[in-house]
Image (tube, rainbow, N blue to C red; front, side):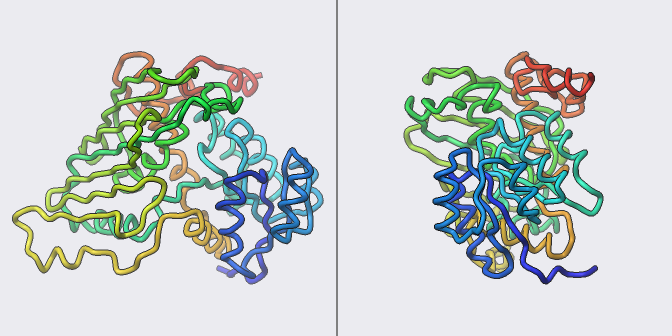
Length: 369
């Protein structure tokens, strides 16, 4: 397979905080492996200012116009959730691969619609799930695959964050139609993706949710327990009502407990491996990660660019990017209907396939027309 040697021409759609704070610095770290070719933002002044700051020769207010003018190899989508699908599909149709902020789409149906615009050998759409790329998570994933820690048995995946009332003054937040859900969709999605990248696919889920403290259409807290194909059972909690914020994941295996507690990102110091009483000390010493790099946009972006240089499908795309949306859809279906949900139920004839609250059939009507 030929390895690409020319810089990857990259356009950034959305010039706000996440682009300037994470995506553009991540591109700059890659040096001459990438070229920052264009900035797109609905605010033309901001597009021009960000382009000038980061050395992009082109700025635009239209994704379509930028794609025609710049013909990028890679498009980074950093806009609010409701605009993801259109920008991703336009980019794929123009021959550009995509790296899109979370949540990937507002529904499983939109995600699957995007897949139809990929090519067998690219372009590909992948998504920002940076927590699975830190060195400690990679180490644990390899240990699980090798069976070093024994069977996974019990898990905890808790995202306990705090967002005040002013956070929801932004027009698209807290609404099913434009955000797709509450903290399960917009906040805990990172921890849940890390969970799934480690333990694999789930089989059934039972959940409850409520709106207790914020004036929003969606939930502001949810509780769930999920059973995995391995047989492991995991507690999943997502909250924006928790003044002492933390992100906490714990995995109890037959031979060890592995924990990580952080907030918005981790390095090795946030992780702990605790052996079961029967485990030999020499075995324990071999479990520690041999490298220390933090979870970050930059780490995932480097892997993405490496995949594109090799002409390979990147991680966090295809089924690998879809599985967390599937878990969230199951969570919402269970919480709204009051029934346990099997993963196998989330098919095209299920309302929760078309929207996370099971109430919108707009996309279905469009596709069926």
